[in-house]
Length: 60
Image (cartoon, rainbow, N blue to C red; front, side, top):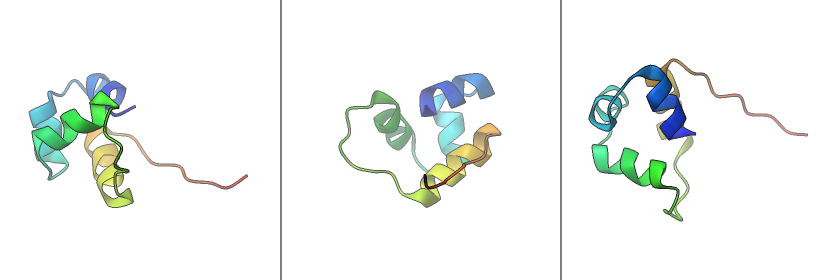
């Protein structure tokens, strides 16, 4: 989803990283889908804000 959000926002990995106050390797790792680490909610919120999206969390 991070890849799609970034592309929809018309940003490069570096631009997204700068807007989300992280690094390009972090964005690349998230986009690869191969990292077993779970990103923090704080990071996901920064990425969402930087790309014009909002996070929706719910329980069913």
